[in-house]
Image 1 (spheres, rainbow, N blue to C red):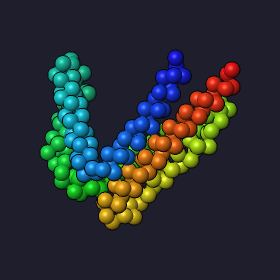
Image 2: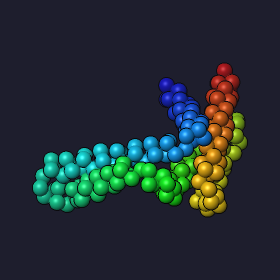
Image 3: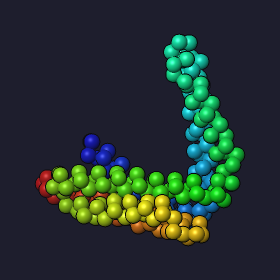
Image 4: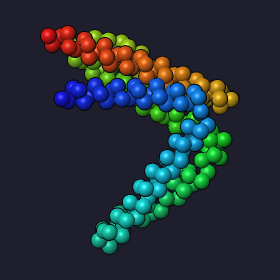
Length: 184
């Protein structure tokens, strides 16, 4: 059951990469504005929860927790992201960094998968390694920001997400097939 859960997690990540790539390719500004707005809503929810936690706690414990400050700052950030999502998209640098960070984190996760596959003596680890390197290279390219036109960067990121999602999905499926042939 644990193996099925692990495999489904990998496949869900792959499907999400491809889906985000396709949406980013077809409607980059709208999608990015949606992501910024969703982040704003998340900050607002976390802020409200922190404020509630502050007032629900023992006064001495609450004074030490700084939950009220954290909550109010989260609320301010959230409201700013929600109401200035269009401006942020037009400014684009924070969004570029977000995509770079997401790609870097995805690359690190894939690197973990690669090392796990090697240590478990599974085949097809090379495909996952290529996907990990590709994700990390994408992050480096985004951080270096050699593109002056944001649409070029969105297109590059979208295509890279689609490619890495497909490669990861194929690798996960082949690894599962390889695993089942070793068990039987």
